[in-house]
Image (tube, rainbow, N blue to C red; front, side, top):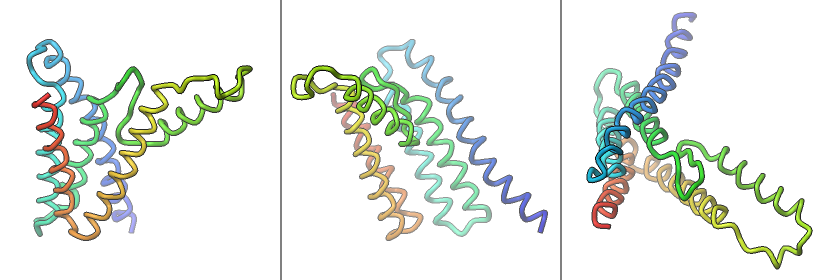
Length: 176
């Protein structure tokens, strides 16, 4: 029993370590790309993420030994890479792999603004950062729900839906 618990703990730890490696890797990838303004930063990061998601999905769909472990490592690496590369949008900090920090920031900012105001709320113009945070939050929730439904219905191959969406984002970014 103790060996089984040790292996389970190691599996969870490997996901965390791989996520942290992905964050560090993103810094190493982004730095030289920023030095070359002609090289598209966002499409490059998303392309790497697509490759990792497709590889993870195929590893899980196949009956290969350690397919689940390979899936977790590839997805953790992709999420770490994404979180490290995509840190700021519209002048605000955005962490793409969790919502609680953004939700806390949104609620705290709005509560502080309205709790300390002397001017009636109808005279205050809306903060554009609040709108951006709400949009990002809604996109994350819809994406999570859609992704969960796809994986529930299509199993491991449902992850390929995320790859398709990322490819569409790459195409949109390259065309603009």
